[in-house]
Length: 249
Image 1 (cartoon, one colour):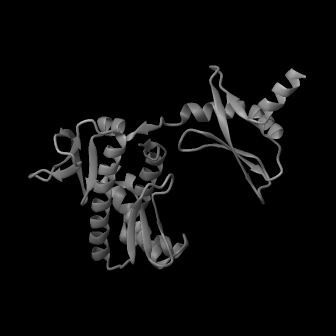
Image 2 (cartoon, rainbow, N blue to C red):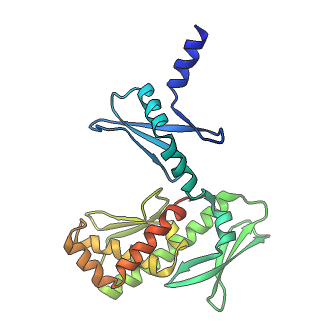
Image 3 (cartoon, rainbow, N blue to C red):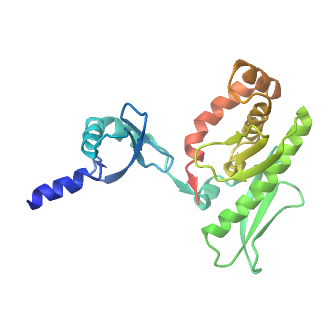
């Protein structure tokens, strides 16, 4: 009786056991209207099982077991999730104003975190109070990203002659940006982590949506006019996205 109870409990919590013996939990998402089971790896490197509404956990576990080899390959190929601190140690540059600037982090005796661009305009200097944690570091970089992306969007909008209602910079989990039908643009703070030309491409992409709220031929023709190298930039961004979107705080 105890064995049956244990087995039932195990089935009720779908999981994946890798070839090395590591046990990985599976996030189960049931949706009405979904007809087929599907497995994926999200940007937190979590296994996600998308299931029809009435699909049982037992059927989900069986599907996971049947796709063990595919899951193993996907998990091994997924970039590692990294914290902002580790990312900036490996890639100490941020983009602003169409330029790539060096980054330096300093401990400060002041109680307030702040940043400044050096006199030469080549380096962003971040000052963190002694003892501050990752949240303070993230908030300071987010503050910089809001200012840098707002300024760059305004500059590019003036260059091509478009207007938008409002711009926000947020911590989207998987999207680089969005544009509402009311002319509100939202950008991902991680845009400051990528090369200036790719940052500009994303901003132009959202500007094109101010006119075309779709991905029709007219949309791509308009975006080609804003960014003549958009196909090249799009390929570069697609290749970088899985890695950059895994930068967390």
